[in-house]
Image (cartoon, rainbow, N blue to C red; front, side, top):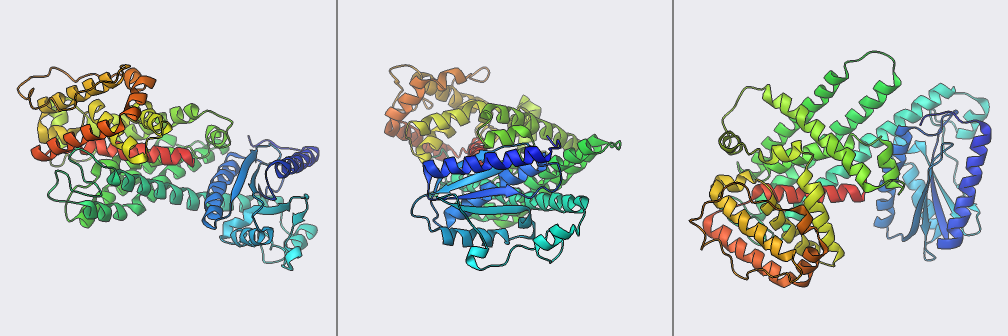
Length: 522
């Protein structure tokens, strides 16, 4: 990707940008904001520059929307001779006010100097700083005006390139963890607010829990904010490490370097657990989500410089190619993390470890080792299918939680209910979804679990993804939404009466929200 280009290619790229601007202005808006990168020398695109541009445009979009500036269109121009991104604005937009906002953003951070935000009017004319009687920007390296240093060639190309790379890396290190931290917090709070959820804490009741409520959960989630950013930072460190290893000919122990980064993630995860317990006064509110979210965030951030991610963001690559890569990274980080944990002295046996010893059920660890297959191949497409059928976020999520409960080995539930009762619950839920997958969509209005309490279940009931992801199943859930929610409420009553709580399924629902957040803003 980091190939050199000559002057002719640079001039041709300039013409392509000009043609794209004119086309977008003619089709979509009153003014246009062009985002380009300063790239001194003959190399105009790199993996780092593309990751930086993608991340900054995500940040810029939110900043503009936060100012109630209406974006009427967006388009990227990926070009070996210089990438660019265009935001087009509606007729109501005040170009002068927008230019002032852009200039403020250009000076917001030291590394913002690596960007050019240029505003073009509908007639193609550029609204410049001089039009507003403002001085031009300073040099990349010193405090002199940029054109003075450029004309005198005060700084070498190598100096300028090193400064630009530093700015791009600094910008990524700031923006990417901040974005992913926000996504993880939003996912955790979204899971909390979903209702009804069998036996779980919601925004209205404490479920089967006498030791925590929504306020306990909110306090512990807030305490984890820094951890989510640190986990993403670990992933980005791995991405930058791989970049550095590819650029240098020096022999390095890459495996040892990766283990060092994963060890940092493990340290941050253990610290996060302590912060959670401190905030919740000793209650385990979301230990599973700490574990899963840390791996998901680190794996996602470690892909920041990959070409598939850039291509997907700019609609040149399928989501499947990105999620496939992401799942492989999740499995890779999980395996490395497990090696570190296995080398530590054995502590007190937890409920999860006891269940694994007795039944060979690995819970969230097994889910992570699989690359979160249950999330990516089952719950995510199911939830999206319901949302496409106009179910509200809450109702779609509540039904998705029931699906996760049917499909996964929830060690929290097994610990409270025992393995056989858990299998009986899952058997009834599998039958529920099987009936919904039939064209008539019939399912019993009352729970059958009480009448089958003495039954023994051999093996885990099998839920077929091919059944629940059919149009019939999704259509029937949407058509009988109120009946489905009433059915979930019955399970909620049953779980509360018996003190059951499917915390593992809740963690996976939160991860489902997190994956959706990250995919929408990758």
